Amino acid sequence: MTESRDPPTGCAMFGIYSGMFRRRRSASMTSLHRINATEAEAAAPAAQANPAHRKAAAVPHDSSLRPARSGRRTAPGPAPRRRPRTRGAADPVPAKAANGVGGARTAADPASEYTGMAAELDKMILDHQRVKGTTQLVRATSGNMMLHRNLGNLNAGAGGASARSSLERGVKQANERKAPNGYAFSGMGNIVKESNKPAAGGDLCRALSHRTDPEKLKEMGNEEYRQGHYAEAVALYDQAIMMDARRPAYWSNKAAALAALGRLIEAVADCKEAVRIDPSYERAHHRLGGLYLRLGEPDKAIYHFKQSSKESTVADVSRAQSVKSRIAKSSDARRLKDWITVLQEAQAAVSDGADCAPQVMALQAEALLRLQRHDEADAVLAGAGAPRFGVDESTKFFGTFGHAYVLIVRAQVDMAAGRFEDAVATAQTAFQLDPSNREVTIVQRRAKAAAAARLRGNDLFKAGKFAEACAAYGEGLDREPGNAVLLCNRAACHAKLGRHEKAVEDCSAALAARPSYSKARLRRADCNVKLERWEASLRDYQVLIQELPENEDVKKALSEVETKLKSQRNGGAPARPQH
Image (cartoon, helix red, strand yellow):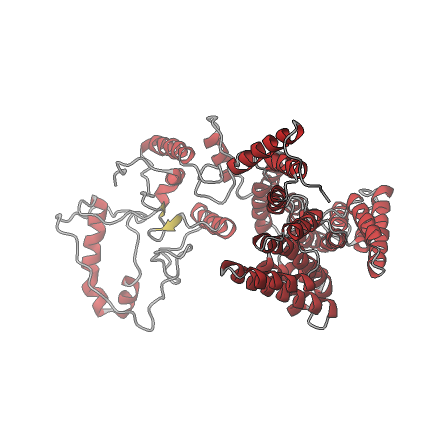
């Protein structure tokens, strides 16, 4: 067999195992192939006469692994034509290839079974696909691993020189062909950091050599974790766990990497597994206590901190007890509708360590909504540091009632921010989780009514029916008082009807709830221009030019207002009195 003219890719590292792979039959067969072919032809009549021979002939043999018999020579001739055969009840059923592509091995085929290096490679391919979800490696024949569109079986050559050169070329091309996540493609399940250093091939070989040592994989995961590569660390810990799931350190280290990625609920599950394996593993207890504290479960945090006396300190237990007290006070104040106390206690709980607790965040956001600080409420639940968990995992972890409360607060925040469709969907999910909860039912009805009123008002406004649209927005405000979007839309209707005073009032109310609402500020500035209130208009335009520095309309309006105000101060026509 000759090498392909195309330079091999990353799978060239498998060239060192090429002596274990099958060689395909070709027109220019070697003398060994010809001898075996002649033997097969000579054995065919006997096999037909003897059922035992027929059964043995049904098993394909690998000519590359069978030694040639000395002393027998046959004249070269064309390759024997294989006769089609139908599979009977006694025939072996072909086993599915390891990666689901191709494959001619059979479950009862002794010639196709193999162990050692080749079996280890098969396991590596399966592990890689299970962890990474890639299908780059496929099986072309029963023993030949290859990449899509590339030749996979490389001739090692004499002395192994060809295998070494193939490996070097494969590593070079793997580093040149970068994956979207910035890592060189290796075609294997191990994590290999892309590097411009010549040691990239060494990293590949190091990962391959450590494939059978879970402790080495753990050490590599620790190294990735220290460098801040948490996703890569998780993958390496997963590999170690697949090889030896009885080591609690693997589960605990993986939990630390998951927590760094913000996947706290998954981290809790892995820490719990580490503690199940070894109930005396104090580091896992301490890590589990910290996770529970961050998620707003102080009782569980205190329990696990006490189980890790060597790892935990008095300060850890004290923080957990403080979070427990803060949450209780915030909940009590909520029942009394003391929103300032709710906000203060919830913020203190976050400062004490419950920084990823959805219920604590919901208490804080609800208090800000009731205090007409809608922008801040939105930032609490939708900011960069806000916890984001799926509905199923949150319901399972926090319980139905707890997660339903978080959802109804989120629905109200969405309404305040003008995301009416999202609000309706979120409220509906909360109602499905807890349909008997009166508070959930009220929020769901409010969200539906406000969304319908806004949609009806928009349709009427587009049709030029400004009075009807104004009434529709008013109905929405009856269900959702202080909603900045509905107020601003109603202000637009007032402006179209020439009621600029009322438009200014609605815009001011919208800005009181959402100071960053640029549309309401622009509308108020324009109405003040109509009322010739130059100074009030100038203040709004000065704020807008900072928020929208590239807006040409704002620049032009600001210039005109400045000119009018200068003319007034220089003895021009007196402005109308401001109220």
